[in-house]
Image (cartoon, rainbow, N blue to C red):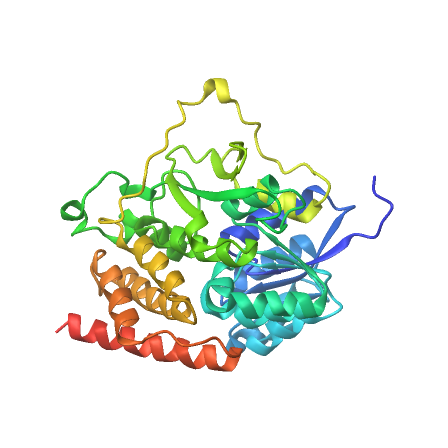
Amino acid sequence: MSTALPRKVAVLGATGSIGASVLDVIARHPDRFQASVLSAHRNVEALVALCERHCPQLAVIADPALEAQLARRLAAAGLACEVASGHDALTAAAASDQCDTVVAALVGAAGLDSTLAAARSGKRLLLANKESVVMAGPLLLQALAEGGGELIPVDSEHNAIFQCLPGGRPDLRASGVRRLILTASGGPFRGRKRAELAAITPEQACKHPNWSMGRKISVDSATLMNKGLEVIEAHHLFGAPVETIEVLVHPQSLVHSLVEYVDGSVLAQLGNPDMRTALAHALGWPQRIEAGVAPLNLAATAPLAFELPDLETFRCLALAFQALRAGGDATTLLNAANEVAVEAFLAGALPFLSIADVVEGVLTELPAQSVVDVETLRERDVEARASARRLLAHACR
């Protein structure tokens, strides 16, 4: 039994799949952790249910129109937690003394400001919102340096790299690292060619073979854009040049990433495909804590297989490498265009294969510019989304 006070954890995006996993781990260790802040986008019912179970100090609903409803439901349940709403409330909560740890699990660009606020405030930042790094990697690292906090990635791939490096995030060259190798399941369409993907539906794209995820990230996994975003994230998180980052398709999703050293050693982190492993590691670091995940039985698993990704069929991964090499804010443009295109695909307004076409069109139309500040990035994000919507309108004529 720990004698220290429990860490106060803000779970931003508590009703999503990451939120569910981290709250499961927290509930297993009530002496170590308290879920002090919970947020949701619009799902009042789910947020109230989580508040009933975890009794946070603060509940935040992103849509201000739902704040009164949330307050009524919490009062009716006899819960005395504070209630707030809106983007600014999320950002303030991430920086407040109501938490010392922030799980950044909001989807998309909406999580940028709260992630930066947590970094500037010296929190332990458990980063699941990869778009924050993709959009504003240099600014996030600057905010961490200013705040003196610590960032621990909880994407399974980056958490695996973190575990395979000495000291978590050292100077790679000084540590003798030759390559970072990110593994990809290949998604639900691994092995298929472009001609076989022309009529793919959102329901098919969201059926991931190994992981349970939200709809947006499931589509990104199907296009391999998710792996492209992770390549960009690895570049910033670990200071890795683009030429030292590679992707291998590994259908079993048991090897989560590998680090190759100059002496020929390759270290890998393995585990069952369950986000609670990475989340428990990040919550407890530098100690190890129980995650509720079944032990990995290698003797009972199928042989482990690895193959190179098909960049011709899954062009989004190639476009992510292209944007990273272009530098500046090209990755911001990539992310914005992809969010618009995936939203259109999920709404039935864009064919699956055209997601890459929209992203490529935006990158062609808007040359990269230097990263100056968050306000400029936000303007470029808006510009890229407008460009993507113009391309969508043209494609639908």
